[in-house]
Image 1 (cartoon, helix red, strand yellow):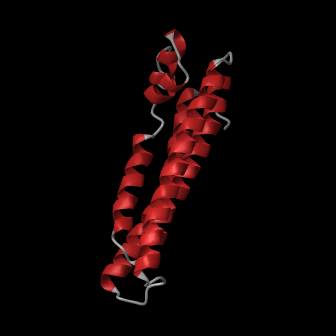
Image 2 (cartoon, one colour):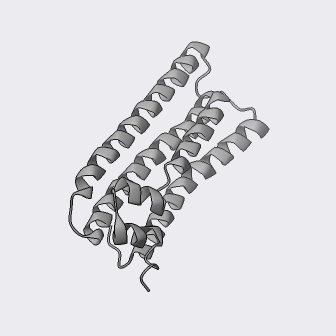
Image 3 (cartoon, one colour):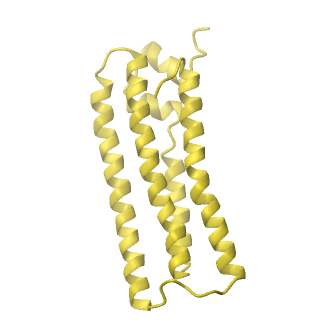
Length: 165
């Protein structure tokens, strides 16, 4: 991820995060409204298959989110050893974008499960995965802690580049 300032780094990261989250949010609203107002034919009607899908998608989501979280934390430790704030932010920016993409994939599974089965459990799963996405949002404080920044570098990241103007 290329950027010219710390402010631009967070601007691009936030824009990408919001754009990624708009797709599943719009899908969910559309499918939920469609299932509420239109009682059409469901793709999967068998209760046994629906139960397996609920548990399967729940477990897959949990495994993916946990794996991505652990992988990002481990990679960030190696990035923290690099010299130079710009290099650190560039490397961790790529990691955080990859993390957001995987979270996007998991959140997108939930509206698809809702439309395929019509089961409201996927609405709850959607809310939980969306909450996880925003809890994991890369704020300046979280990026600073992720990179184990100290001193001027920490102040620069937390203030988004405005500390030394």
